[in-house]
Length: 237
Image (cartoon, rainbow, N blue to C red; front, side):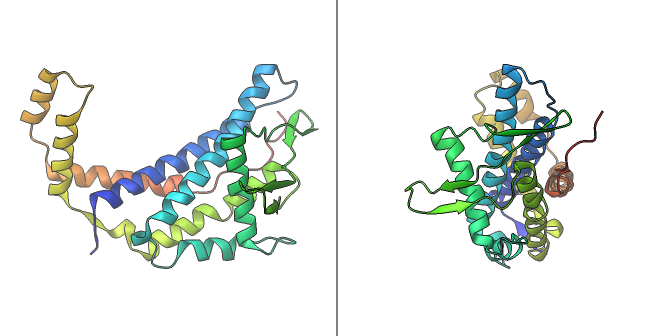
């Protein structure tokens, strides 16, 4: 059985955070209805932007952790991120990457163009985005931003899950003694805990089986975080 390093364990916990954050961002984005106040417009922009910031952060994190992708995550992502009329998965990925970059580095408002369906604001996807050197252009693979998101949801989490399953990550153990040592180090280095509380924490036995149980719970949460979000227009209320 594979034993996860502390670094790989922490990467998985970070991946779980990003993927949960993207769920939260999308859930909040889908809650808005017209008429939109100025505050609503700002918040909607923040949440739709947050979806792409977090899903791209998760993808980049996964791509950079080569020890956890024996079946080549990037190649699978490109091969599956293809849709009718948009058969270049790498170009489709480049579109969402550069959309995210435009939000982060150039302040792009990805909610600036809207159609209204009933009372639900259907954001139009930015038709084209350029890379940071402005030498390459990538086109949206759907008209509406929500449909772009739905297509991302149909692919990204499932590719990650397949790669993690292929690597045996959910069956992997952790080095319980190393986890206990990491816990003690975190307590010792904490800038928030008063010294008296640190002393009490360090004097209390932290059992290795607690670390194992906590990791098992974290892996169950990771599976949940990788599940696709409901990215359909909400029913009229």
